[in-house]
Length: 487
Image (cartoon, rainbow, N blue to C red; front, side):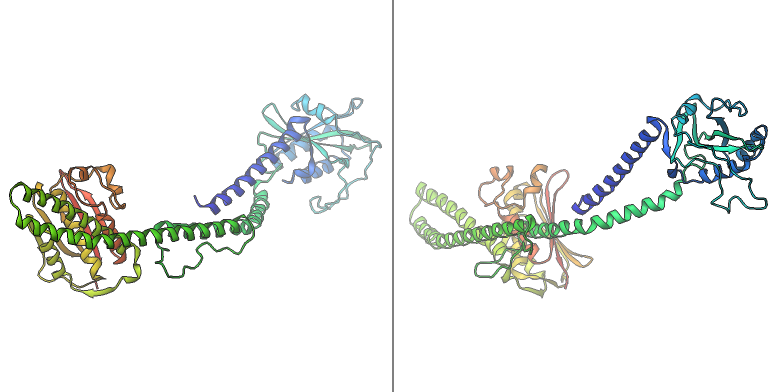
């Protein structure tokens, strides 16, 4: 997962946890503690409904209140009940369905200091439209909200006058099996917009900070990947621009400067090592050539065991010469990318030339059309890659059966396939074949070679904008496919 995605997810989870903790805190404070809850949190319409119910009860006989409560229950979809909070009031009958815990909690609400006596409600006036109607509820901010007997109970204390203008201190209760009171206690849909707005504002607040951190980290990561893949390597004498350049004075800026110094030292060491190995290889070339020439002259003058010993020494020197040439080829393909020359040419004769040179004393089958279409590649890399693949097949599998070379066009590419009947490569060794100087178990059985063949092929294919694929064959054998772009 990308770093900015992690920050985004973290911010979202942070808000979710905050919302959960806030909900738990409100639940514990309002329900688990003593059941008293600020009534301003109940914005589903229950307070307005209770005001209307209270106004409809005013100036009527307490015996008619039950009928008004039943009517309101049918209207609003919750059960309205009424209980007296004055133990000396014998005119108000408590509703039997109201739990004792609700009454105990209501008794904790602040009691009125004065008795409130309201005038009659004007006739022909819409109570819903008259928001400032005197409903008789006390100015206390607390209300009762708790769960008991499988029901959710919401109650508010108020003073209601009867038909003779006698005030009664009562608790008007609304109950429902749903915690939202069917939308009358809480309206979830009305809370979605503020919640979404809070999330959006939080993300807008976090996002610049996230980008401020993740964008330079992404640039540093891409630069490090280029260094790891060798794309940013330049030969000695060429100027290399800074790879990790961030105009910052914080930890990311210091990290950028440290990585740039590290890459500079790494490239300097690599360049020095390549130059050193190249010079040694060149210095070894002339003495080895003179030694081979001298041994050939000496072998012509000797016979018997001495001649065979000289021939064995000549084979050893030939292997050392091949190793030197492989090192030079690897350094040339991996260390001098400025020498790449992409051109258009016909590969037909070049393929035949590689087969003649590498398959002289080996059973080989060449399957190729008379004239292949032209390709766009570096001619020297094309020949080096193909010859190395054929040389490996001859070295490790020529004794096991014939080698097959196939050249054909596949879409917009030229595919060259080299197959053998050898033992193949261990599955655990396949991923290491293109690493320099890697020699698997088959290398122990076939002395000679440098372990650079497939590395050179890979480098040459990359310089030609081509690709390589290799795999074991069933039941035995090995297969290498080279793909070059057509002109």
